[in-house]
Image 1 (cartoon, helix red, strand yellow):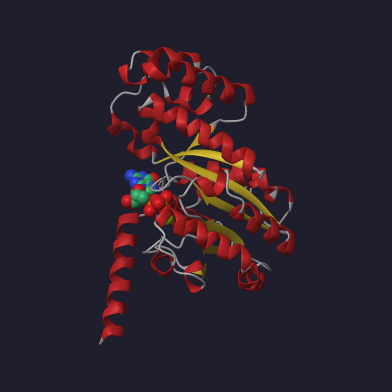
Image 2 (cartoon, helix red, strand yellow; image 1 turned 180 degrees about the vertical axis):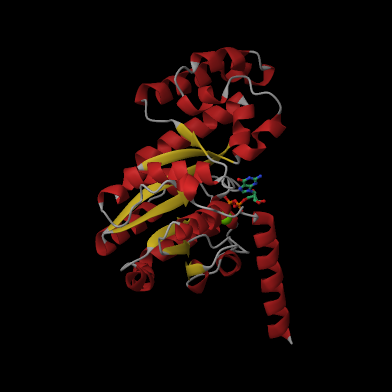
Length: 298
Ligand SMILES: Nc1nc2c(ncn2[C@@H]2O[C@H](COP(=O)(O)OP(=O)(O)O)[C@@H](O)[C@H]2O)c(=O)[nH]1
Ligand SMILES: [Mg+2]
C-alpha cells in the first residue's frame, strides 16, 4: 500500500506552499516524501519535485497551439494527462515502493467538482499503484470575512467531496493572517464547525448586496446543512503543532496509522521543525530558474 495526499483548492489558497511545508514536516518525522507537481501553471516551485507534469505538457504551449485561455488550457492538460496516464504511472511506480506522495494540483476548482479527468486519473493510479489517498482541500481563511464568500466555500467543499469520492479534509489555510482581517462576525469555531448556518443568514440579510439572493442563499445553506458533511480544520503551515494535528487527521483518514509503517503516533511537539520561510523559498526558486534561463541563453 502506498499513502499520500492530493492537495486541492482555489488558486492562491496555498497548495504549493502547503506541499513545501508538509514535505519538510513529513521528512523530519522520517517519511520519504515525493512531491508530484500536476499543476502546469505552477511557474516557480519552492520544493524539490519528484515528478513534474511540465515534462509531459506545458500550459503555454497548449494555450498558444489550441487558442485556449488559462482555464480551458488547464482542462486540456488534465485530459491529456488522463490519455497519457502510462507516463505518470511509469514515473510513480519506482517511487511507490517506499515514498509517501503529495500531489500538488491546479486551482481550477471545476476540475474537482464537475470534470472527470482528474477523478479518472486518480482512480487509475489508485488501482495500479494500490494508493491510499486523502484529498486535502485548502480554503483561504480570508473567505470567512465575507458571508457570501464563505457560503461559496461551503458549496465548493461539499460538491468536491461528493464528486471526488475520496477521504476528504477541508482546511482553512493561512490562519496566521486571520488577525489581519479585522474582527470576524462569529468566533472561528462557527466557521470550522458549520453547525448552524441560520446565524449566518441573519448576518447576510444585513448586507444590501445579498438581499436579492436571500432566498437562494438560504436554500444553499440548507443543502449544505442537510448533507452534514462539511466541516473545517485550521492550518498555519508555519506552526509545527498545527501541521502535526493535520497529519494525524490525514493519517487516520487514509489509513496510514493502521498500516504499521512507522510510529506515526510520535509526539509532533517533540520534533524540532524550522519555520517554513515560503517567500524566501519562492524567491530563491525564481532566482535559480532565472539564472538557469540566463545560462542557457548564453
Ligand atoms: N501568510 C501566509 N501566506 C501564505 C500561506 N500559504 C501560502 N501563502 C502565500 O499565498 C500565496 C499563494 O500561495 P501558493 O502556495 O502559491 O498557492 P496555490 O496557488 O494554491 O498553490 C503565496 O504568495 C504564498 O506565499 C500561509 O500559510 N500564510
Ligand atoms: Mg500552486
